[in-house]
Amino acid sequence: MTSKPRKTFPNLRNGEKQALNELKKNKNITIKPADKGGAVVVLNTSDYIAECTKQLSNITHYQPLSANPSINIIKSSQRHSNRVLGTGKSPQKSLKHSLHSILHQEDFTSSLKYTKKGTLEDLL
Image (cartoon, rainbow, N blue to C red; front, side, top):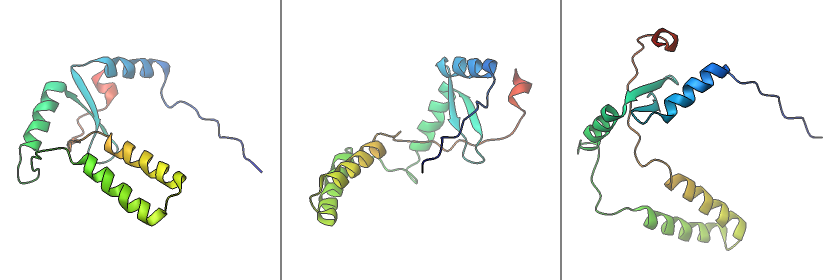
């Protein structure tokens, strides 16, 4: 027995959707999730780049790499998966897809701090 998919309803009004799309198109601002609470942070893009550069320059937490290790990680994972899963094509394809999606995510996510200063409606 199959169940019907639930009907979904938008949580934004048309004007809010339009405003969000306009903000996304603006290259002068960067919209990212905050570090806690599901909040969203809107930053001047140049400030965002400066903060990312500052964080990445901290050699206590980040170590510069001479080369991208992604290819070696993929090859090693494939060798190990072949040993564990055998030669069946389906699990390997699934693993390959998973590795591809993991490795093509953003390489760096800054930890943006969020301080509540007002609602979006207050800013508009």
